[in-house]
Image (cartoon, rainbow, N blue to C red; front, side, top):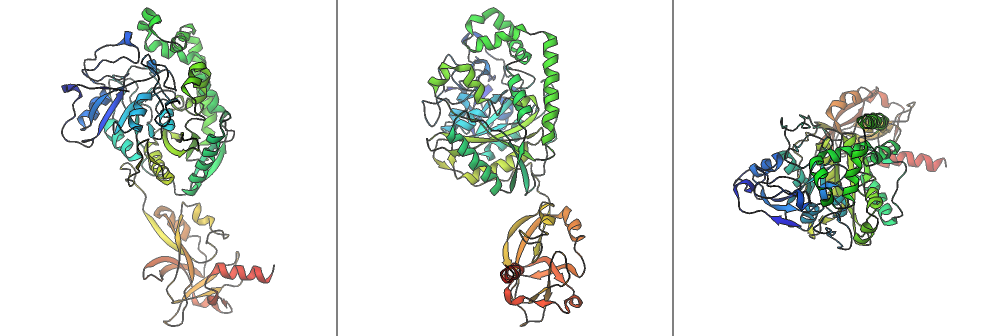
Length: 552
């Protein structure tokens, strides 16, 4: 799967740097000095004068290039079987496809041959192989990594992608790989969001999901939704139709003309050297006019506008990386239709200028990996990796096909978490109580349950709507332990929360049973005349339960 790099100057790492000690491989549509670039087609092979811009950046950062990897010819495919060198097997079951077109890059990472590998991603080639091999596939925002020195597939939407066994390694590589390149027409200077998704975030889920009869994949995705909820997410159904329509246009419209344009001179002279079905797909690009292209580009923009309606409601979109898994024999019998199905949840991403991260989610009962992809608008790369790392570690999976456990999580350097404040609540703001929304709508998350030091009395305040208690500090020996919850919210939201607190309640410092202190609700003494002392119940939740029991 990997052609070794000779000990030549163009492929040697420096002795130090942020990637020192890490080995990598590159997909064979990327230039690496002293190694031929074939794009999976021997007749196309050439000797590059220098390494691709991104490859050189990684070498300069200290990484060691071990060689180049097999791919679907001209990066045209999502399955890994379209190579004259033969199909790349799945790392877990060699009868199944590896996914493509960055098939070899995914395989060498999954099997532990290198620490990371570069792929390319036009329609999902940096994500599908990751999902099918239990590894991470980071598809950056378009233009974040230069593609100069990469044989294009569809240059306007091509992305250099990163495969790794952990999100932390992928992030480490991206930090060195990214950067504007004035000689790449599609390189961009992008400001990446540095604030993580809120603790209580919303994630989109396609209202209609398609797994093409694969019940194991369907069950694995249901587990993925539940895991996202355990991380603080709320699922929101979204209309997937505009995204599906964009995905279909990638290969079924004048957009395919860009694939022909990418290798036009070679293809016109050596069409017979290109294998099927790659040949037919690229040849179809000859039949479209400039008017056809403008028409479909306008169609993509219109569908993108429709898809944009989901973003005010969600922080990210959750989809299966691939809806199902096919054997190599199945794929070779029906290479176009089955390949299209593998791209059901990937083809639209680059056309709509989104960032995406595929992370492992499960190993199915049949032993095959299942991955999920997190998607968000351009510039959300660090946000996706922060959430994706937490998701990956919550699975308890091992690294790729190596069996090695996941290492400890590492902070995402590009993420700067906002300052927070902890506040203790004892009554109507408790989980499930009427005013809890005042916390959650400000991004507050539950830290845990505890109790006060024995210096407080709790009273049921008369005439309050909704019913509220009052917590009063009393002299030593006269108090009780009172149950409470501690919540953490962004400091920027704390002022608006405190402004909602009505008299006679206020915010003060509470002493906890473990000897620490926290900001929390207290009550003025004057308001407690005629109030019922409910301290003997130990907390507001127990008091509410007693009222319900007395009045069933």
